[in-house]
Length: 114
Image (cartoon, rainbow, N blue to C red; front, side, top):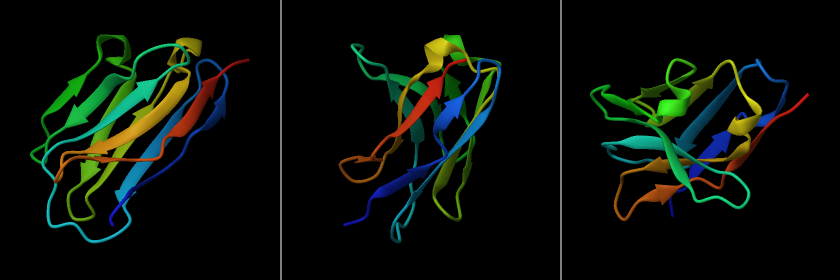
């Protein structure tokens, strides 16, 4: 069964940057929308950014101007460039693909702390 594989999380100081990557483990014909969600301890999972295969994007208000979502349609990969990171960005970040019943990544921890 195809899964989404994420990478790029870690520990970074406030103001720093990280780049998350996500791609399927096997072959997928095409994916319409791909997205990044996050879930902080004690909070509900929230949509951070979303992109269609045509490049239309959506961002959570609190990350606008700091995060950039992009994708490689040939690889069905999606990326999240995160700049000017804040402690409140600390969360587990999940990749999501609108394919079949929906595909989720395993999650990658992002910790912003001095």
